[in-house]
Length: 300
Image (tube, rainbow, N blue to C red; front, side, top):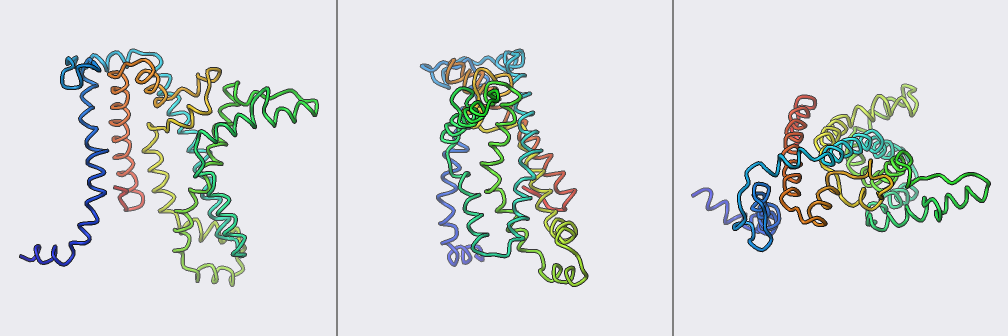
C-alpha cells in the first residue's frame, strides 16, 4: 500500500524514465539478438534465424588471421599513447583556467577550447590534410618556400602517429576540462587563502591543494580510460589514416568495417565486435574494482 501511494505521488518521475528506458531497450538491448551471428554462417537472404550454426568456427578463423592481431596491437598502442599524451592535457588546461582571475578572458578561453569537440572528424580530417599534406599542405608549402624539405606528416608512420596524437589532444582537451573544473570548484577556498597567508606561491598551492583536492576525480577518470583500452572510435583513425600508414592506422573498428561492410563477412565482423565487448566488459569491471580500492568509490 505504501508503494502505491508513493507511486501516485511521484508518478511524474517514473514517466520521465519511459523515454530513456525505451531508447535503451530498442537500440542497446534489441541489437543483442544479432550477437548470434558470431556463431552462425550468416546468409543475408536467410536472415539470422535461418542461417546455419557453425559454433566457434568464426572465432577460430578470426584468431588465425594475422590482420586481427595487427589491428589489436594498433588499438592498444594508440589508446595507450593517447592515454599518455591526451589524459594530462585537460587536467593542465583546467588548472590554468581555474587560476585565471579575469572572468571575461576565462569564458572566452573556455569557448575557444570547447569548439573543436563539436567539429565532425570528417571536417577535422579535411583540415589535417589541408595543413599537413606532403605535396599540398600549407605547412609543407611554407617549409619548402623557406628552403626546407617537406615533412611526410601523413605518409610516414612515425610522423603520422605524432600527427594523430596531437590532433586528438586539440579535439578533446578543451571538452575534457569540464569535469576537472567542476571538481576544482568544490575545493574549499579557505585552504587557498590560508596557504597564501602562509607565503605559499601559486605553484605550491597547485601542488599541495589543487591537485590533491581533485585526486579522486583524476584517479577515477584514469581508471575509466584504462577500462576502455580495447575500444577505439572509428572516425579518427579512418579519416586521418591511409594505405601508406596502415601498419599503424588499421585498428579493430576499421578492421570490422573492412571485413564486414566491404567484404560482406558479417560473421567475422560480429566475432570481432563480440570480442571487443567481452574484453571491454572485463577491463571495465577490473577498472571498477581498482577504482573502489584506490578511492573507496565505485564507478559502476
